[in-house]
Amino acid sequence: MSDDGIKDITIIGAGPTGLFAAFYAGLRGMSCRIVDALPQLGGQLMALYPEKYIFDVGGLPKILAKDLAKNMIEQGTQFGPEVVLEAEVQQLIPEDGHIRLVTPRGEFLTKTVVITAGKGALNPRVLECPGWADHYSDTGGVHTHVRQPEDFRGKRVLIIGGGDSAVDWVLGLRGIAREITLIHRRDEFRAHKSTVLEMRQAAERGDVTIRTPYEVGEISGEGGCVARVTLINNDTKEAEELHVEAVVALLGFKPDLGPIGRWGLELERNTIKVSQLMETNIAGVYAAGDVVHYPGKLELIATGYGEAAVAVNNAVHYLNPKARVNPGHSTNLKLFKQDDEGEE
Ligand SMILES: Cc1cc2nc3c(=O)[nH]c(=O)nc-3n(C[C@H](O)[C@H](O)[C@H](O)COP(=O)(O)OP(=O)(O)OC[C@H]3O[C@@H](n4cnc5c(N)ncnc54)[C@H](O)[C@@H]3O)c2cc1C
Image 1 (tube, protein in one colour):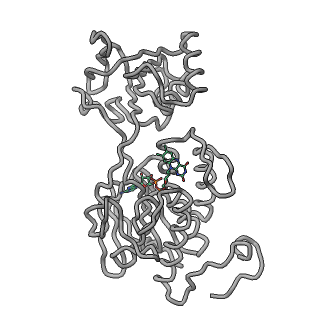
Image 2 (image 1 turned 120 degrees about the vertical axis):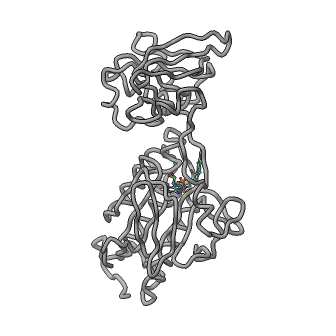
């Protein structure tokens, strides 16, 4: 179908369900855009548990979440969907003949929408301490993501957190940052055992500094950029100052359905009610994955795959009532250089 800036299908949410929906949109020859609030594709798999093994995806007896995400990204983007990241969709406005999506990265027009927003935008947790809000920006030096390791070259960096992301970046910024200090409010880390061990060995060699149990009391700066952080020892309550040029707080994510609740969708228990065809109550708007509710719903990756296929194939039929809902078998599709594709 044509792509005059108005996509046939826009997918909101690039978790496993959204990526599989993007695959199906491409398979059906639809122009497609996939939009996510996060700076990366992969949804919960990449944001919450990249180092955990998953055992219940059909055909894959055991796979790391980050490896499943990598495979899904390869499969989901093979037909070249437009990918828009760091763009939380704030408004969904049905207009004459199309739907307008409003994001901080601009407005996007689309004929249909598949909402695969999981638990909502996974907003990074932030600290409530004095000075946080004044410096939480690329120029202020306080971050909740590492986008480019090179941004930290030659800097004294404080990393805050006890999970996989914090430990991974302590290791990942070695040789780039001038000094790396990690603080965590507890003595135990939630991160993968092998990376915690690697980090502790790096600390023994003096490559990085680990301080536990510590929290941030205050962030202060000079010329708009962070310069000092007051650290509080959770046991003794003593305070001390650390000179830094960058702070990276990797404290996990806070799920929030957020703006989706204001789009006029019929909701039930913080999820979107859908029909058997994955239709919402708004014409042309479908939903799938963790964000939906129907009797018997299971919040699993495997379930999301099936729902994505149902949603996209019904969106195709909605866009062109002559197109069959059934996509046929991929084993037979010319698209994959196979024979016997059925006529539509
Ligand atoms: C620790 C843990 C372990 C798990 N283990 C398993 C397991 O072993 N097996 C299994 O089947 N399931 C497991 N799950 C559950 C599984 O991860 C989810 O069922 C799955 O991720 C749901 O996929 P999804 O694509 O529907 O949503 P998500 O993965 O949540 O992706 C939704 C995406 O939508 C984006 N988004 C939301 N709102 C907006 C908006 N307004 N604008 C733009 N983007 C938006 C979010 O940023 C996110 O990237 C586990 C979950 C956790 C937390």
